Amino acid sequence: MATNVIMPALGMAQEKGRLIRWLVEPGAAVEKGDPLMEVETDKTTVEIEAPASGILTQVTAAAGDEVPVTQVVAVIVAPGEVAVTVDAALAPVAVTATPQTPALPPTTSPAASPVAVRVAAEHGVDLWLVVPKGARVEKSDVLAYIEAHERATTPGSSQRVLASPKARRLAAEEGLVLTAIRGTGPEGAVQVADVLAAVTQPAAVSFAPVAASPVSPLEPAVEPAPAAMETVSTLWRVMAERMTQSWTTVPHFYLLREVNAEGLIAWRTKLLQRSTERSSFQDKITFTDLLTKVVAAALARHPRVNASWRDGVIAAGSGIHVGIAIAVEGGLVVPVIHHADRLRGSEIARQRQELMARAQAGKLRLEDLADGTFTISNLGMYGVDAFNAIVNPPQAAILAVGRIADRVVAVNGQPAVRPTLMLSLSCDHRVVDGARGAAFLDTLADLIEEPLALLD
Image (cartoon, rainbow, N blue to C red; front, side, top):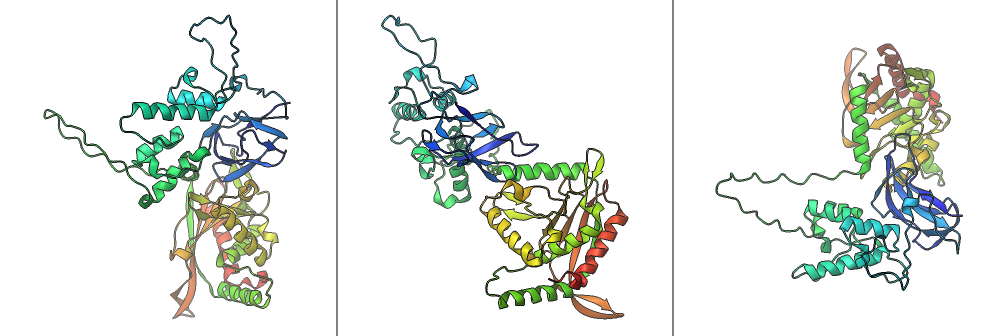
């Protein structure tokens, strides 16, 4: 029987998903469990597997489309089976002409694929005017009709670029000429992603001239329009919404601590020497890896900091799962080192490197982002001395880490130069009060300055 392919709900608060691309062409065979399509959620891009074996038909969403969750986007049928979707609204209506059919205006739609119906509606095309190449009107037939129509009605036009409606609208907003953008969609069609790529590389595209509008002598001159606003990714938009929600609903307070980093530096040096001696061990341990290990040990001693605020109650963490904030092209992601308290420093380093590679490639899995109970945000590599971070809800705290730098400190009443780093702990006061936060930070500082108990 036919199996619907739906836009999955990959998060509790997710309402829509963006289809990045189909991994199987319409009309092609697919096996259950094979990668079927790539979907962008509010956190990452995920490959969705085929729910059944058969032939992919009745594709109703194109690359770049945002689709409500649970909406049918395609149907998989067995070879030779008639494609009938569970949602009758997606089924094409076939019209059979007979010799007795009077020459009256049609009252029903011609046989057409759902995608063709949608594209025709978006462009205001009467499907009865489209001549199909096959038994029914397909998307390519509608696009060919639109191209021919615009060539015939646009003076001096000799080229029509295939592009999705959203891509055309975005290109117009950015002042880009579609002919200068390389399309990656079917038949070279320009997709939204192609336009966004062109926006980030302005030297590779042409900008459409802006015609001056005549100004009536009785009307004041109109101020020039401001520069086009930057189009943000779904990831950035969701990050902005969540941080706004956190900042406006979570009662933040901050604790600062300057820590002697000599022990941390010595620990890393020892581990790097060990990795050099072992040719099979290629991981490069960073200060972030060591801080993850130290933070996990401190959280084990202060479980309240590892808890969260949920529906008016304090919920204990399911484990010690430390998230690491990573900047990527479209925004900020926080992949999670699960059960960090049980891992060696080398294991944390290896997992972090794998997570960073997937994050930069946009291939993080849902499990990579799930169940975080605490977050580390390290900006030391950017030369930042100290900063305050926003709590990542529903977590109770986040640690902001600055750079390690030589600073003058008092040692036995005398000034001395020591390598130190600044720690800033942001806390949700509904879960962690000042005393608990200070106790956690004190334990953390002790472990950083004397990490011998954690050496592995």
